[in-house]
Length: 367
Image (cartoon, rainbow, N blue to C red; front, top):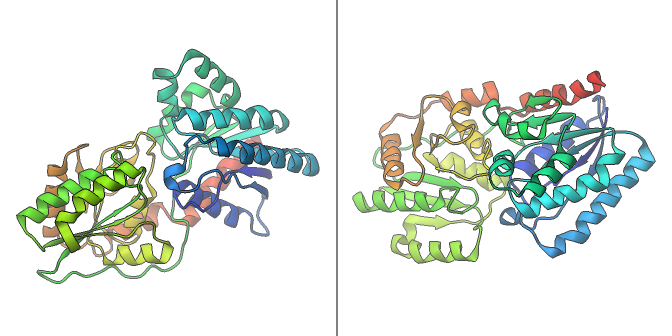
């Protein structure tokens, strides 16, 4: 099967770009049933820039479309694989350009929905003309790949011919280092990794930490890794963090090795997200792989991707519940491999690649 992959690989590093890299590495190996051609749609400078409109993105976008058409002309008919926009107008208009220029020249279209919420936005917030154009240009895809059954309904408004479920995974396999074993009375390490924004639950996590710190100074430490979504958010954090001194540390973006080290040093991952584009957060899979307990929300596909034990759910915008859940996690015993086993049963790279292969080959068999 010949496939043009029109999508971005790292940098910037986020779940979507990591999954594209894994796809290219694994499906592009010799002996596979795929012949892959890649156009790297490198439009975003960092994670906070993903999906945002900038005039400087226009020329690279048109250049990528031209490259895709040249590949199609040189190598013959093939399927077009594309990652559609979240519910952001600027990103959606980008998709219109790509579909208008490229889709007519490719016999099959595969849309891989890493972000969630466009269908709801089209039905409830989009202008009539936006809804019609989107249906015309992105509608009736030969295959729509979604992250979980719970979010499949979001793409129904675009009438896909076939829908497949392909869960996320870690982008790197191999033996992971053992988790940290905390000694009695030792500082309890809380970890937040992700975009430092309101909707990701970053400031709720910070407020929860303030409650714990006030209750028992020195008993907890919060480590933050990620980028801010705005200068205002960064200043808000800096103004607040002064009161905690060394009890809160901000590391910014961290690479794969540093991230693995953070997980092995942490006692709980706090990720109380309610981000409108959230589907199946990769950071939760990373926590499972490293056997780290989780405090999160019952948002989108999250509840069905996690096991029952060593996971605490909180309501949105409830720092008091977050603080109480972290306190409970501290009182609980260590997972001793329970979370890691759930990862091995559901989210390994091999399982992801196998499901992706089946989904892609299904449209070849149907043609």
